[in-house]
Length: 101
Image (cartoon, rainbow, N blue to C red; front, side, top):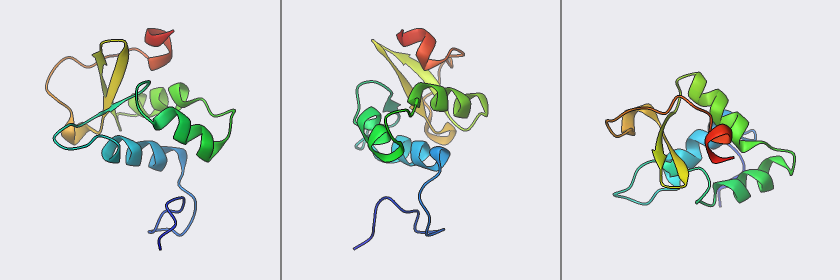
């Protein structure tokens, strides 16, 4: 059985970026795309994987700034997408931390 905590390509633990992008691609169930930052299993899973000091909002913000993810407002949350699956619309140019605080 494959160990889900290791990247099968490298045989090492996932980097923060790999973990977040994998979550954005795999947490939503079809036909949905994009991951809600707050209302998903992501927060708990990321803390379990990286430890209690992990700041998911800051890491997602960094990856958005690097144009590896895009984001859209969702009622009470922010939805993040990998660019190739992002719905057309206006991108959010604010961090999840600032909007959700």
